[in-house]
Length: 89
Image (cartoon, rainbow, N blue to C red):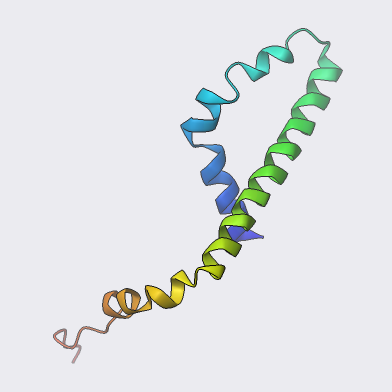
């Protein structure tokens, strides 16, 4: 769940969806009473989480299909290579 939650967070805080696809979506909530607003906020939060989870899962499957981890593994090995110049005596 935690990798998906991170993906949801990263998608959710990005400016592109909010500026281009959902400008002023909360204005729709303002014309209702308090109970309906609370229900709409909870439902929209769940919907946002589900949609962002699906996007992140699609990204994960696409990266797995393209085998990006294996293709860029040499870079990872180079970056994580132990440094023998550091002496810990």
